Image 1 (spheres, one colour):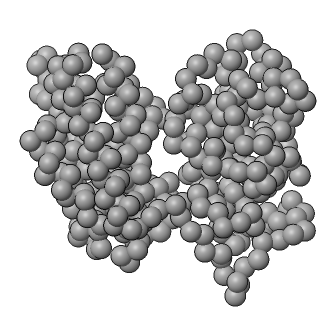
Image 2 (cartoon, one colour; image 1 turned 60 degrees about the vertical axis):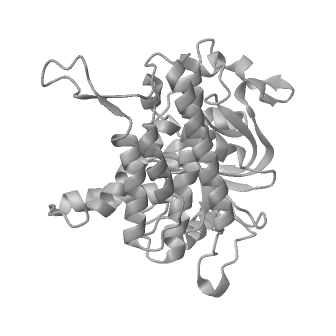
Image 3 (cartoon, helix red, strand yellow; image 1 turned 180 degrees about the vertical axis):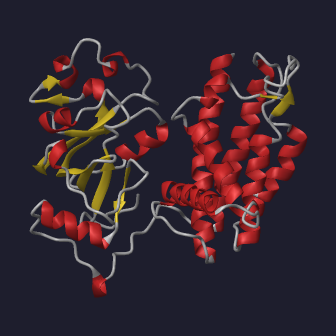
Length: 352
C-alpha cells in the first residue's frame, strides 16, 4: 500500500467468518484488527500506520466498524490493553495462546473505534465494494459515500471532479528496480537448489538446465497480452513442469502420476507458496485458454477468478489493457513470487 497522506480509508477484512478464533466482540472490546496465518496477510496488516482510517468488514455480512489506527502491529502475545495482555483474558485453549512462529502468528493493530455495529446490524447493500485482500485502500466512490453516511463521518473524503481518487500502488515500474528483483529471485532459486541437494530427496527443486531459460523469459516487462502470456506461461512451466518427477510408486490409476520436489508444507492452506502457485495457474489459464470453447458459466467463473487474483496482486480489479496495466500486474506477480521463494527456501532448510 502506498499512502500520500491519511485522507484515504483502508478496507480491513476481519476474516471472522472463516476463522473460529476470531470474534467481532473481541475486536470491539479489546480495540483491534488483526491478520495472520500467512506472511502475505501479516505484511498487509503491518502496513497500517498510526492515524490511518479503517473500515472493518466481516465476509458475507458487511461493514461493522470505523476507526483510526492508534498503535501499529505487534504480535498478539504482546498486545496489551490498559496495561494487561489481551490473551490473559481469553479462554485457556484459544489457538492464539499456542502460537510460536512469527511468520504465521497473529499480528494485532490497536484501533480507536469511532463507531461500531453488532454483526446483526452490519452495513451492506447491493453494489457495495468489498475486497479479497485483508488490507487495502478503499477506493470505490459509491461504497465510501455509503459508509460515510452510515457511520456518520463528518470529515468526508474529497473526490476530484466527482471521480474516485487515484490511489498509487506500491508496484515500481522502473527497469532497474525490476532487474534487481529478478536478480534476487535468481539468487533465491540458486540457494533453494543447493539446499535441495542436501535434503531428503537429494536433488535440486528446480531443474537447473531449464532455469536459465526460464529466468531469461521473466526478466523483461510485458507490454501486450502476448508478451504477458509468455511471462505467465514461463512461471507456470516452472511450477508445473520443471519441478515434477514421475512417481516411482505409481501403481494404479488413482495414484498421482507425478510427484513434486517441493516440501509437503508447500501445499499448506493459506501458505504464500500455495497461493502464488494457484495465482500463476489462474493467470496463465486466462491468457492461454481464452480461445477455448466454453459454456457461459465456465467463462464467467474463469473471468471472476482472474479478476480476484488481479485485485489481490495490485489492489484494484481490472482487465489489463495498457502497457502500464501489464507492468502493474507483472510486478504484483513477481512481488508475490519473490516472497514465495523466500518461504520455499526456509521450507527446504527446515527439511535438512
